[in-house]
Picture (cartoon, rainbow, N blue to C red):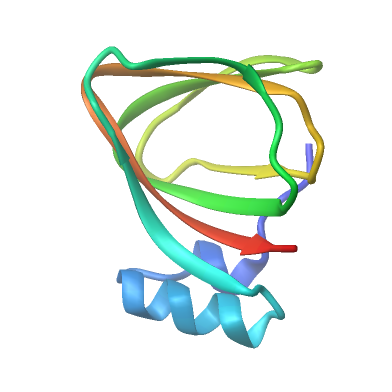
Length: 100
């Protein structure tokens, strides 16, 4: 499984994550928050994404299986990767860097 850019994983604030993402060549970086028990069925994005979970928990499913992600965990999705998402009882927040 690919790892996120080391400077993204080292970030301790959203602003540091955003600064590191832009320096690493990403187009944008943001926080995404999801409601408790939200389920997002199979879909894909037209961008590459590298993310760091900062709150709550989620399950990310793709062709490699389903991963349970908690604060401090990371994930990488190449553009066009079909995946699904399920969020825990408290929802989840992750910081994500995107590159078109």
